[in-house]
Length: 223
View 1: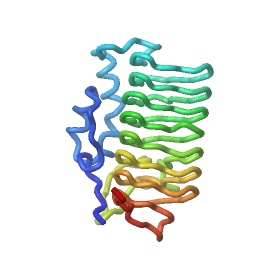
View 2: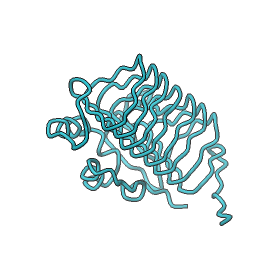
View 3: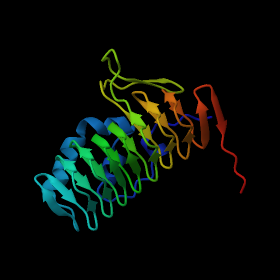
């Protein structure tokens, strides 16, 4: 099973204002250190169809923001996205269209492509979530090692990132079960599903079902 980690292997980015970012960096975690600057530059220039929500925050058309939501800048929320009660967006967050940021979920320094769902009690920090990816209730992207050392991503080879904080790297269509912990730098491949209550680390191939760290099966194609 190929354990892909390159940006163009994990994502099909069609969000116009994110294409320059995704085409520039070979690995998705390389986008994280410059994300605040990138979002701020987009806000300064403006994006057609987006309006100012508050200082340093832009929202697209038909964004629904419930009461008791906190959004700090710089942040850009894509068209049709829904932000539910109690959500805390701590800044350096950018989303594509039609995402769901759920009740009591917390996001910081992360990218959500299109139709991403983090709908219930999720933490997403220093992470990149692909199109149609989903995090079950209570699942989190742990972004800091207990020893505070830089994150090393363990795939078919080791990737020395030099970054102290990396959360989850979810490819397009990745689906994380309820109550999971993605340890720092965990990469979930395209269309791979993870059973609930798993604690994962490393790189997981595309089109798999992860029942546990030592029980991974290739998804059958019955079509």
